[in-house]
Image 1 (tube, helix red, strand yellow):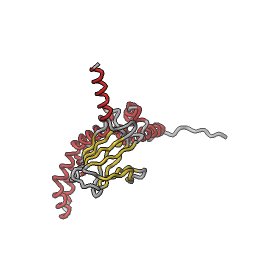
Image 2 (cartoon, helix red, strand yellow; image 1 turned 135 degrees about the horizontal axis):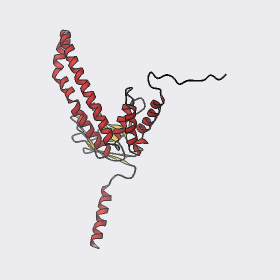
Image 3 (cartoon, one colour; image 1 turned 180 degrees about the vertical axis):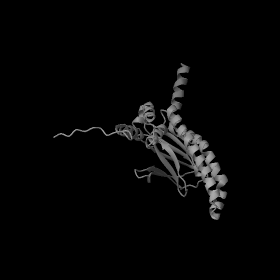
Length: 253
């Protein structure tokens, strides 16, 4: 009997700790060092790419909270009043935790849901791949500026050639990372975005893209990116191959 009571008590504790209701999101934010009254804006993107406010709240005692519901995962952003940069994240039902770094908005941390944890991890991996390119830019910025001022085309062309080679290497490695990620993460919203991006490339491997799409979790196929992928595959597969003869027609007289 005591064991049953203990189990029931534990269940009550678990239920009470779950702040998020069904089909609801909560954004729990910390804003350490940011004064009370500062506005936090939740922004979404319209069809033209412009950012539009969806919700606003004030910072109170270094914290803020937003609640609502969303039908499917989508990229949103948090804008701190007066800050130059935004904090991108994936808004989805569940508890999203955002820790704003007031001194460097770009290193603010987002966690708490599957897709946001995956987004953070994915970005870290891609940043490592792109580090070689960023290191080259940092190392050679002064040399390039000096060469441009002196109109030293030999140095400029040499640096640009080296930069292009590294850029191509990074692009190839990044592309491989994207595909590997999509293959191994069929439940991730990022995978759907990767496949959608692949199909926007005229040189895309359509068969590979279709295989990745077919392996996606069914819930992702119902999202806007999933629907767009299906439509694009139908469009691409319905087009004749480049250089292929047109289908014969008959004249009815």
